[in-house]
Image (cartoon, rainbow, N blue to C red; front, side, top):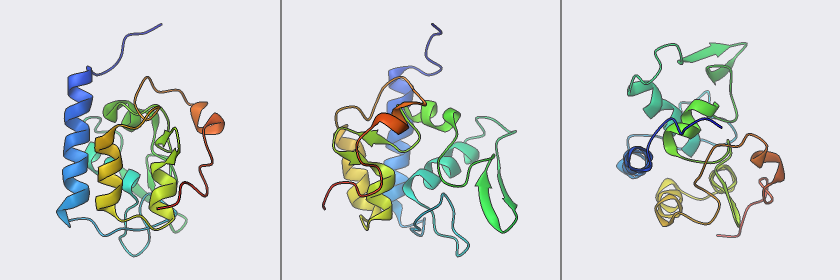
Length: 145
């Protein structure tokens, strides 16, 4: 078993930067993709953008292919490296009662999503496990707001 890429203190600081960005008004909110054609970001797209701006991995960048915006090779969910940078355990930001992706796509505004991130709900944080996305709670409908 390999050691974590980042310390708990580092991932907590990365999440603090993410929460601040979500509340800043700098990002227009979008739905159903990391970055929409009209320049809207989902909450996880904001995380990808911050990862990119931090220069963590210069080979991981935004690109547009076949009319779709991608971060590296992903349009709908961030790559593993971004989730590890944040200390989240899967690509949807799943936790015990929903997911950050579902909140975003079902109408929660960035400030509400930031509140959830800060509250550190059960199962949101931890070692990244790609399979967690498939075994988590209902990631499409999410909880009622």
